[in-house]
Length: 284
Image 1 (cartoon, helix red, strand yellow):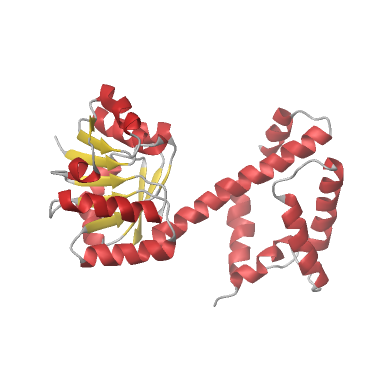
Image 2: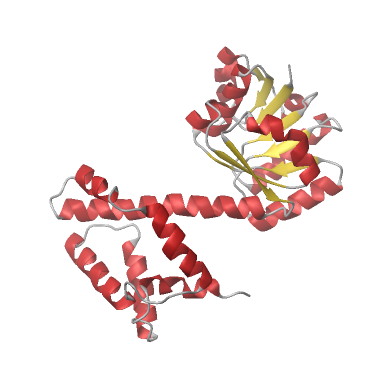
């Protein structure tokens, strides 16, 4: 039986801890709100009073925390209890540049540390589904690869560059949040048009979003803005959308319209609507 620890037992962390305990690991957990740890007792998770107590004797320590500042605070509190061979697996969504510095600093100090953000919610964490990204030393990844595979349906090693998993996590979350914002606007247009929201969402099933990402998305990344849906025509359609909803609040389309207007004023209305990515291709 492997002894592991979880520092942070919010919705995702508690799902991970529950799943690990059910798989037969000896799990100790700590959370700032002790009630959240005690609630895991029914699954055999042992509550610790401090991070140092939680990690003492653990082969792996999993961090599921809020942000970079909390990661640094909790790591500092846990360090006195860490064994020399303990591997820290950090699932926190963090700022890439701070993550890169943390990976380099900790490994240089002899602390085994990998950044492993995930695309999964609490049910997926409990049931070892979803995806996990990994960045950090390849040899260290190989050491824990089999154990990480038990936590998720897909483990994707991104490389030794410390910030690469953090950046990719932001890419994915931007898509999730952006899609939610656009769907909210679609529902607003449906409301204003006296169409049921369910019917509006069903319509989206006719669109091949994966093909759009592979086609238009890759063209955008390559800087290919040959017109198939001209920006000026797309802006006309966005105007119709905004006029349809009137004074109702919108989540995304007003900002899209403003960006389109900037590019049209710059003489780019005849290019593909994907030209809105033009500045994203500039490199510092």
